[in-house]
Length: 150
Image 1: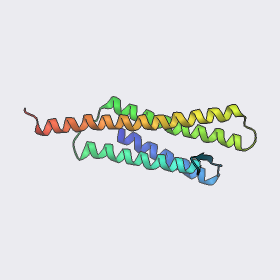
Image 2: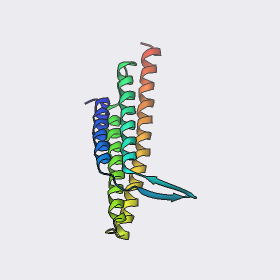
Image 3: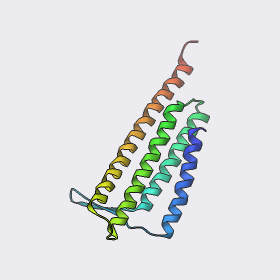
């Protein structure tokens, strides 16, 4: 399955999850970093995942249809998997933090919440790095095919 279709399917799944999160509000995660107080809700994370999935679907589709490029399949699958790891890591982090804000959580659960949050952020950075490498390989292939000697 092409990566554009995979990301389009992910975007539709995240859109359904946004609708479900709208029906039942969950508390967010409160972050206080360097004098700035941030509240991140699960609906915002799911909206970010939806928008990012649509963006990647459009980029992969444009590369295939407009520029007639062939994306590296292994890097594309790795990109999708790392993006899913990002979404799961942040979702688990919010689920654990919701349990902790209800008063039934412990300090150990909050530590796991931070581990899941860091895993999600690191997988997003790795996901973007893999996409950059895949884009570089694809652009190199396009330039070779158009300007290279036959």
